[in-house]
Amino acid sequence: MSTLGFIEYDKASPEVRAVYDDIMATRKIDKVTNFWKALAHDPVRLKRTWEDTKEIMGAGALDPLVKELIYVAVSVSNQCDYCIAAHSAAARKKGMTEAMFNEMMAVVGLANQNNRLVAGHQVEVDEQFKAIG
Image 1 (cartoon, rainbow, N blue to C red):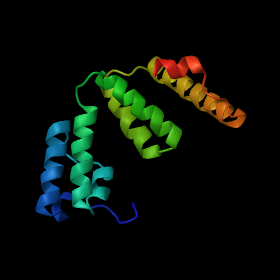
Image 2: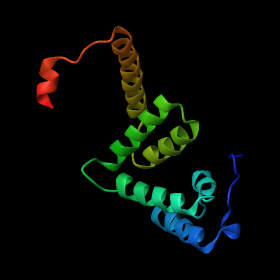
Image 3: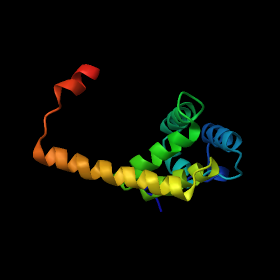
Image 4: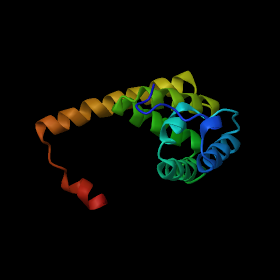
């Protein structure tokens, strides 16, 4: 259970229901997931987070599958079980294969390992990287 519990559709204010309706219509689902129901205790944040999510995760310069893979990678690094599950499911719906998942996890592992090594050794950034911007 979330800290404040979940606000179900039938108990939601009209403002929250409007966001829930948009989530369900946009995602073509018949039930709002727990993340949104937990955020519904703060309707302003709920709406802002949903609007940001629609804009950022929607069509853009990056392919939607790439966006989901990035989201999973960051979620793995941040150890967010909920987001790993939610965005892995979304990535599978967008075409993620087992091989893609495994390769992405290898990159995440390598990046986290090397990030710790760089931080521990306090490696300064090379001038050639600074020049690239």
